[in-house]
Length: 223
Image (cartoon, rainbow, N blue to C red):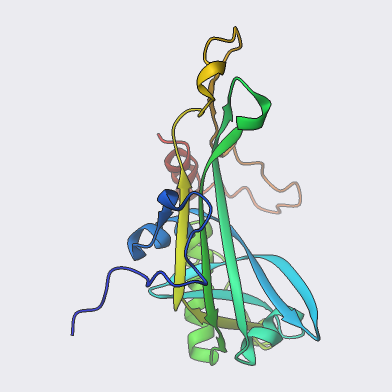
């Protein structure tokens, strides 16, 4: 049976406010997850809601999270409890003629799922994915985690069972009567730029900045 390329749109994940901005193609959701460095994980524990920011990495149709074995978030997910995870990328400020219609252009994704803890073999592979997502090439260059560090670290995987994306693009949407106002309107595009690397002053060798770091900066800056 052919696997669907879309997430089902049900009450829990359906975009209700401006529904035409909703996207349910898995490829679209995954692209947003991959572009974001930080996600926010929401869960309820002992009737108390929490939202915790953390790094993430995607492995196919599951999202990987890591942290200390004592982490409230990690223990909650490892126990098989449900979480909701969100990422947002801001692409521009949208300045309308009226304050009411000001907005931002953005790409966002929200996923739902229940997690599980990975075993030691899966943990090492996941840590490699985290590292390579941040800086491709770093895993093979830096010292790998030792047994003490691995013991103190847990990795959980959350299957992306249900998800949706919401995307806004384009200019402001003003009321018809406001288009005649002598007020500038438009979009201020935004992007994340990587700056030149700063060498740690505690370096005890004259190791140069690795080529994969300069490659990362050039790639992220559109070079």
